[in-house]
Image (cartoon, rainbow, N blue to C red; front, side):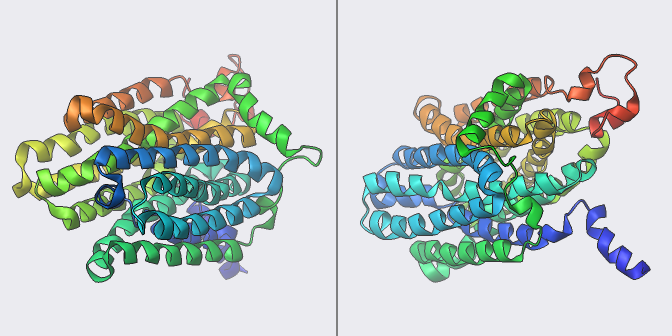
Length: 436
């Protein structure tokens, strides 16, 4: 039936696996809850037990270590347990330790408990979100994998911190900071249930590893891919640099934009929402574009080089022009959000570089994604007392230039095929544009 065929194929044309539609929506809602705190928690902790912004930054560093480990585990465990079970575990960890963090740490202004409980909560969202990313890579066809991953990051950054920041800017005046943090628990619970109950693709959601493989073997494989496929390790480093500055700026920029630049906390939160609102749109643009012009080309030019310029403009333009030019800050923020999306194809490129060990490659890539949540705050906390906000910004801008150089080393297996190899034997979008 023509009508039925059109209905069935439309999401596929967009690169959106239809059976996972509610999973994407659930991830969006989950990450809205996770992103509620992102624009105000560092200064709030500093004023309620942490003492200084630097000490609050150490809380985010502890959190980042947990995120890094959980991001790696999400890929390895999803191979053995299946993405669905890993997502259940992540959602439960997030809910339990978030409640404990609010009651036992923030509620009593206990700094050591902030480090411990917020750190442990860091295991939650990577298991949930990156477990779903494994589900996508196991379900989506390779020819549309860049677009499918783009939709994932549309949902991911749509919540963290785009809609999360908007939610906070609206709810803080009504509920206060603590009430807003409690509302995040409701959002995360609703999103988790929607994703896990609504996603209908059983094959990609259950065990992916061969029957005889144990959890220990899966974890070993997720490490060994670093030396069996060294370019996957390079891709992991690029993934770290991708969002390390983003996480780092959330440690040192909130108070600067709010107080020193004179924008106030509300306009800072709105700026964050604008940055990542732009980002979620361009996640789709660059996800689809990369399937045409090449994954590596998109990452190196639009992603790494673009972010090196736009991240520096985000800080220096408001610093030079002052609070009377909020519109300029918005434009700089939109440029950063757009160029940040240029890294989207990394989640399609890296697994494709290890076709015989995609699960291990995804695990190592997720380690890079989680490592960014550790490296960014750690660098910000380290260099802020030494070089100030301007120096930290230059460090992060320089990292993006390093990422551009590293990206040029990333090659698909078919690109190393001997001259004259049949074109039909080569797969993937990089072949389509003749990248060598």
